[in-house]
Image (cartoon, rainbow, N blue to C red; front, side):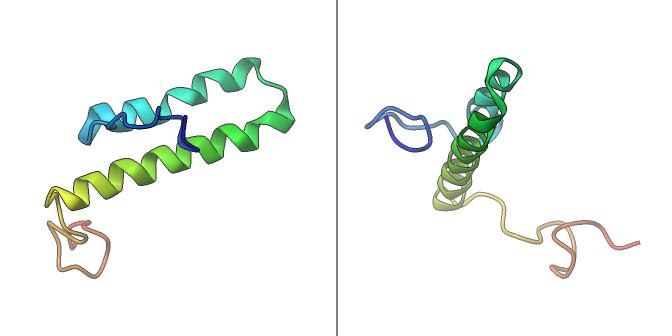
Length: 77
């Protein structure tokens, strides 16, 4: 198991399924003692970083897509 909670050799799906999988450890927070919450958040962050990297590697959406690139992809108003 890696820091992200993904078994070695397991490929985390990209896109919405990958994000859902990365967020799944949050379900443990309700039953985990508060001192363990940081570890869960770190695991979620690592999983989300893995998903983001896989989307970027696959030629996914570029930063700022949909706008002028100045405001993180939000449309200009």
